[in-house]
Length: 525
Image (cartoon, rainbow, N blue to C red; front, side, top):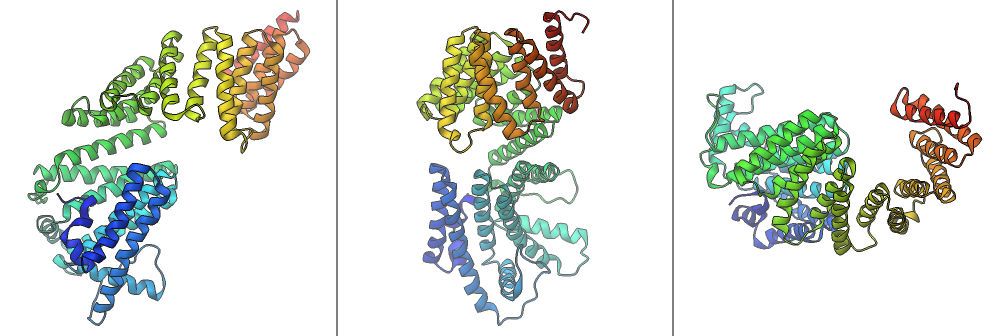
């Protein structure tokens, strides 16, 4: 089956590379990179392997181009991304020659496939900008081959008849053995570019890329089934022998899923829900209710519902996602642990706490088993368990859980970032549980440390600083230290009014001040 993953094993690639030995050199680098990504998740080591494979192909391009330079050649008016100078222009002439060569232009698809892989590896390392650069280059080399075919068919005149272009495109689809691979690459590049831009907060650009990716994949699926509503549109009669319908449907569902994630990031919950639902509908119809992709989208839908405080819908989504996850993994894995954690959050938010505790303890058990005790994921489960225990009045258990979570986080991130928010938040939680347990001194120790570290990290004029001032003020009221409570709460009120305006936070502080005045005997205020 022709596919971007096996370009490097086909006879066309071997011939274009000039022989089996030259082809094997490039292929070995690519397979090394694939292995490092797939099995070891060592993306930092995979990237040099991919670039080495690209280098092997570029060496072949140079050798072939030198042998062809004596022949006259007029190419397209394009330039490769990031090229300049005489040497780069000569190299670009080689690429154009290769694009026009039926025997050699598979190398452009190979280069596109490698750059897509390298971009994906940068993506996994959160190097979004570099990933985008590789995706741009991947699309350039893919489209260079496609453009060369159309120019061969329609001529090089600047103004081409649309009818001639349709005929040329139809010929390309029906006679180019690698058309479907080019189409798959185009969809993957566009989709992954959109994901990278979304992570760079370039939401409008990401939206345009996702829309384009969806158009490409839907057009390919329609063509595969001979379903073209516009007269004169090409049909891919040969496509069904190479590309499975399952792959295209899965790709479309993935793009819809990604659109849902983007809509959610942009604060468009209704549109996000629609995209997730469309993705689910496609997957369930094609692959059934137990497909792993269904589990992934249900989890994202559960997150969306949770953020919208639709806790019952969120629980149902997480529960079904967990069922599918357990069906495929057998022994509960880290994906199952995350779903147990999410279900714990749902019941912590809506009750009953007993169900939240059961789910969170299962999450903690799995994470200890897979990650060990000294792991941030283990610490996050302990932190949530501490919140639940505190809400249930089990203060000693809560203190132990918070202190263990704090010790893990301090051991991992405390040396480099002693005022990291993950540490500060535990101090707040510890202060709260000490306060509920009637231990004023311990509560003030935690609050004071938190106030100092949040002020240093975020600045004194910040909502998170006012939150701690509010807690300290309430603690002073409980301890009957009214003058200190007054000073602290007024400072919290000043920050909240200036930053938040009329809000629930301002109302909270005014309520505490009212209680303080009442306890002080000042009923008028």
